Length: 154
Picture 1: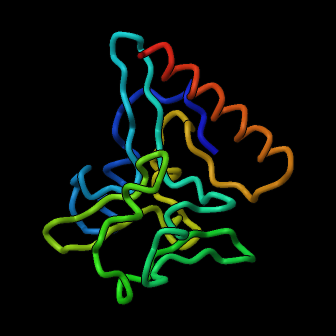
Picture 2: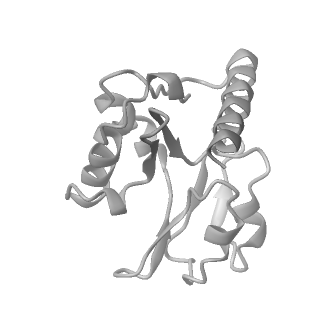
C-alpha cells in the first residue's frame, strides 16, 4: 500500500531498494521511484502494482513475465528475458525499468516478502500487507487520487 499524503520525497525507499538489489546506493537501479512535484509539495512513491491483468505479461513474447496465482507477484525470469523492452512500453505506470549496462529489464520483486522500501520509509508512506478486499478498495482510491494529482500537474 502506498500513502502519497505521507511521502516526503526523501529517497530512502529508492536508496534502500537499490542497495538491496545491487549493493550500491543508486536510485537509477531502484525498483521504486519517488515522483516529485516540488511546486505543489507533492511526492508519490511508485512501484509495480502487481496488476490483476498485467499488460507487461501480455506483451512478453518469450514468456519471461509471469504472475504467481497464489501470491499475485508479477515476476521477470531474467534467463528467459531477451531485453526487447516491450514490457517497459506496456506498463501504464512506467514501473518496469531497463538497465543498459546489464541489458536486462527489472521491476519490484517485493524483496522476497521483506520489502526494504517499507523497512526504511521514515513516514510509513509504504506498507506491505496481505491483500484484502478493503485494501484493494483503498488501492483504487489511492490510484484515483494519484490520477487527480496528475491532472492538476498537466
